[in-house]
Image (cartoon, rainbow, N blue to C red; front, side, top):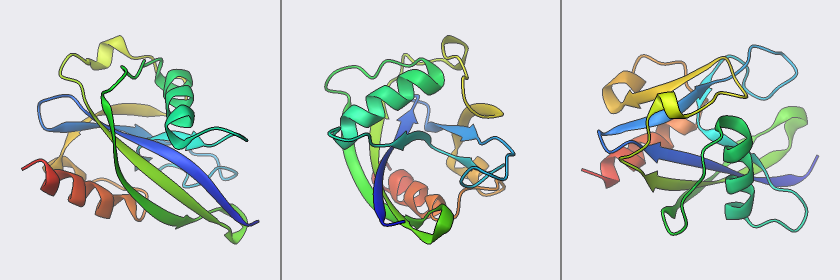
Length: 139
């Protein structure tokens, strides 16, 4: 496996909390049973933002409003089979978003979490550093 690309969303509800997904506990998926961002891989010809919009709509039925997503950072992860996936993280601030307005279509659970909450969570390795950078940037 070579290098692939993916996009992920850091959705802030305006209360200093970000939305995270508790991934399914299936050994055949990447990072089973960990907490992390919503998102997914790019299809042929898609930009990272186009992929993010598609994935988020499918996973939680959230419509990313035009002009609200900002590229935040990229990070390389080791994927299944030893390949590298470059994940582009986009930050979105949406004070109108409520958990009860979203529908979980992928994963075991989801919720909004503060920086302090993350300290005790079993996060996808590497995403903790992204979250620390993100919370530092909004202080």
